[in-house]
Image 1 (cartoon, rainbow, N blue to C red):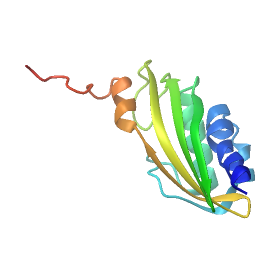
Image 2 (image 1 turned 90 degrees about the horizontal axis):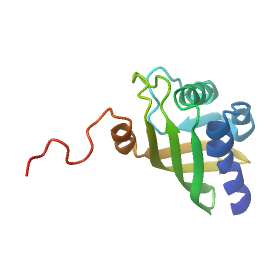
Image 3 (image 1 turned 180 degrees about the vertical axis):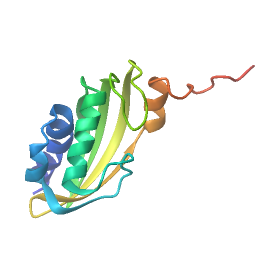
Length: 145
């Protein structure tokens, strides 16, 4: 069961976000799915919200690539450490396209019941991403010796 849960959970970052295949959401996400993460403004919860998030993300980062560095499964849970990389060529979450490339890490936790993802938590390095995209100063910027 652990390997099948890891394979199921991998479909979200690799196929849905990485390839923009929003139809996969209906296959792998339960109808009563709960996302415990922070969704951008204007994105509703549930399947339709996920599809809007994928479309907004892929529009802003058309060259988005995602790799899963580590995946651990225990019981109903799958934990993934992923690396995201892309160039911001479109607006996203109220930020204008910067044209800059960023690479950021994330940890996703999915709970799977009956072959469907029923809950999701995530922690993303948004600070690092925003610094690389030019929206925040890099660490140590502005300090004088």
